Image 1 (spheres, rainbow, N blue to C red):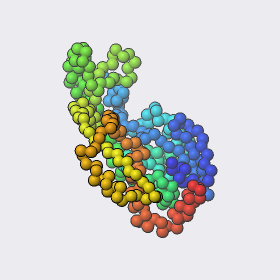
Image 2: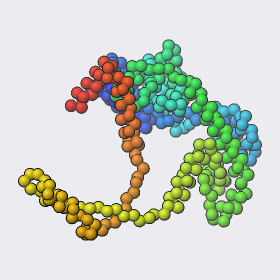
Image 3: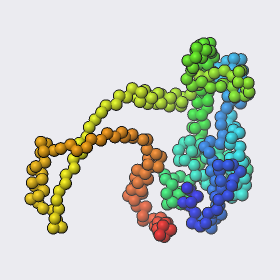
Image 4: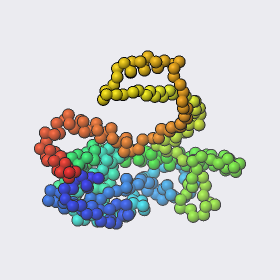
Length: 334
């Protein structure tokens, strides 16, 4: 979307090194621009020592309390290697980089990860503010062009805040998952043996190929628990819902028209004669209707309309460059 919004010429698409991250080449204000994408975070956080790592074994030999002080580091997961290689390849050909990630703390953290990959591939990007951050509130053409004309700096304080939150999530999740799994190990074995099953169980050691040696875990996470609570609450609401029949009256009236207009006396007499005693039920129909959750596009429509209204109040139409952009869009639509 950002590439099509910023382009004023022919845009060419080519394959990137990653399957789901193509590259778009275009010309913008005389500059050759290449646009690519990422799939969320390109780095994960894990414990530095292998015996503490998420995929490592030996839970019984490690006291979960030690994980509160164990060193952590960020690494590139296997499923993101191609995406990072794609970023580095394009960065080697660039003199400047503009980061168009979501304008929130999580997006700022992803932008910092992408910036680090770019500098690693092309050290010259790390000097003279050659890596800029684009800030935008929508994907409209005017908003994207304005963000490209007026980029800002990367807010590393937001990125570091996300790193702190991810570290807390890692430590709490790893400690409490291992602690309660070991604590409930005998109970879970007995409970599963009775054929009742256990909710939210999964293999705890992904490195073990022998499925018989895999044990079950009771997963804990600061984010997943509230989400699970919402799911359970909604499930109980649906399960305990009691449907009740209701009726609705739909009246149809046939009136005579003549002379190209409405006869007032005819309508008045019809109104006076339409008392409940003179009504007759001709049909009776039963229908079932479901209210589906609105799609993402339907949810974004009111937001886009409000954004356009606020931009209009802010005097965006008095910007000569924006007016020129609007004229170009109208000509393209025609």
